[in-house]
Length: 76
Image (cartoon, rainbow, N blue to C red; front, side):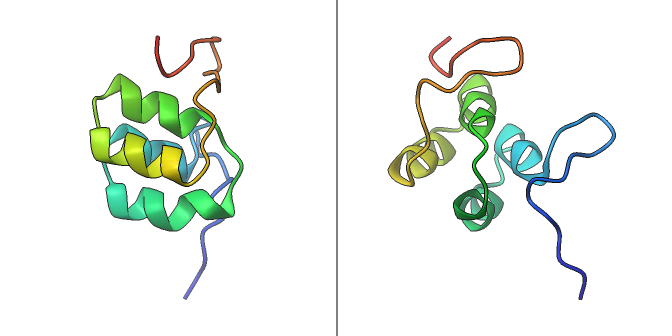
């Protein structure tokens, strides 16, 4: 079985964690988040209204002041 690096970006520079947060894949976020230091998944989850993912990321130590590539925080 081939393992996926949670920090490896795809063609659009999004990582597996970003895709999971953007599309509401809570199980994937819970599995991948502790293995990476990315801050923007919280932004994607907030942008798309995935409350359970937001809660999960925050309880696992996500920084609510993290910024997207364009400088917005999750509260934006």
